[in-house]
Length: 115
Length: 110
Image (cartoon, rainbow over all chains, first blue to last red):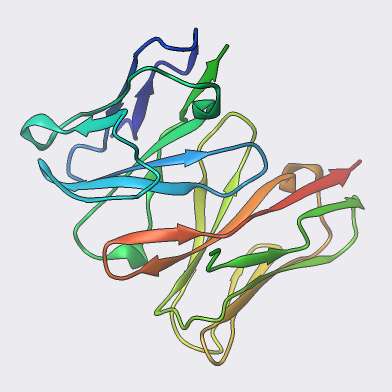
């Protein structure tokens, strides 16, 4: 068990460019979550998957954001036409189906800087 | 609307001192969790409290869940520099996801 892996760790992009992040969850975890965290704040929910189905999206997730989890394994989060306000840490977490009481396992995050 | 408010937002104390941080909500939660996050890393789960009034200890850390299950506290005894980090409380929102608090950034000065 290698934990939750996120790539890249850091991404600097010019405003207007598209970026894609990848998350590899713990293999036996069927739930996968994406959160966004700005400096000094707690993580904010973006979206989550149970297996390959995307079950909920936050209103924070504008039309420029899309997430996929093909075959219920890894997930990707794409941001199109990036804006400076998209600069943040993007965190992926996974959990089992046993219940939220067992908590999340987070990856180390992808820090996005839009210049 | 922030469902979980944490206080203080920042706390800086000397090594060896004791401290308490708080997590408050107007909503009732079936459980609350505490995470610690170090710079450049994701949060790491410390504990889950489930029963109103429950107290859990993790070495020098003591976690308490309020009787009404609307609040929680984290007390650290004899703080050490390794305790430095962002402490986050989190609770289930519906049955599907966790909502996180605003965080307390703790700095322990050697």
